[in-house]
Length: 104
Image 1 (spheres, one colour):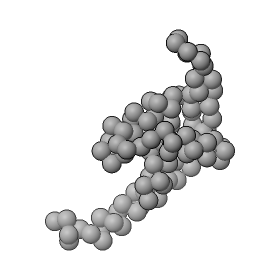
Image 2 (cartoon, rainbow, N blue to C red; image 1 turned 60 degrees about the horizontal axis):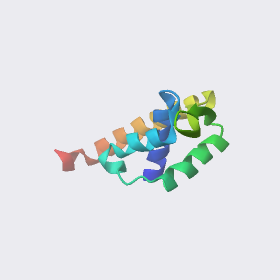
Image 3 (cartoon, rainbow, N blue to C red; image 1 turned 60 degrees about the vertical axis):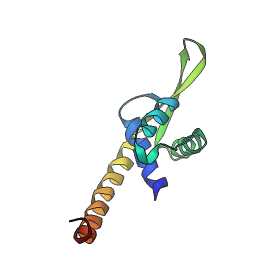
């Protein structure tokens, strides 16, 4: 379950604008549930998203080293993310309705 949510979170972060992979990791780690995310988890996910045509990358020169790969969401990725968010909201609503007696 976390893997699917991670994909949605990464697409959400990338949808905000060009972003470097270490910035994605920092943003994910700022949330308690995703604190343990490692580069070894993120990089294969970014590769899958790129191979699926959901994200693209471009190389930018770096001030202190080699060029860096910056990710951006594709139009297909925006559509896919919108679908994920609709499904997420529907799923969340079902879970809330199904468990509300235990929460209140």
